[in-house]
Amino acid sequence: MEAKITEIEDMDFFKEESEEDKIKSAQETIKHVTLQQEANEIAESIEKKEKSEEVEEPQIETPEVTKPNKFKEMLKKLDVFISKKGAANKDPNKKNFINKSKEFIKECRRVLKVTKRPDKEEFLTIVKATLLGMAIIGGAGFIIHMTRVLVFN
Image (cartoon, rainbow, N blue to C red; front, top):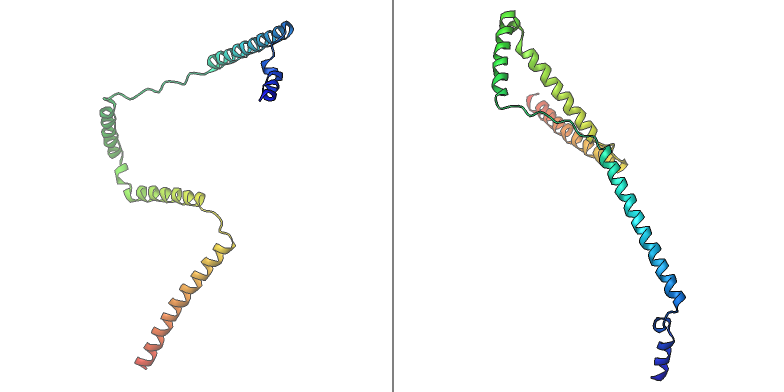
């Protein structure tokens, strides 16, 4: 037991520091504190620069409650103006067809963006399923044709 006590006493932890060691550790602590203060000052200056460089986003004007009524009035005036100019004689289905065509093209583009090229396994599976469907439909057509030929001839 005494051997363990002497070993513990020999450790640096329990030894008293000399004046020089105390001065060195105090100097290191001061250096550490000053470095930390400098780092904090640099961080604060960066934050100030970022805040000063931020560009204010333009304020978006919100429509007033009365604007929809004004918009409806303008639409009514526009309808009257168009009907006076003879634009009412144009085919409304033509505009409808054009709008439907544009929507269809947009949907096709969206689908093409989402799709991906199949890998070899997936492609072979699709080919097998397609050939099986064609064989079933072809076989059904052949059976129907043969029964018609046998029954009516």
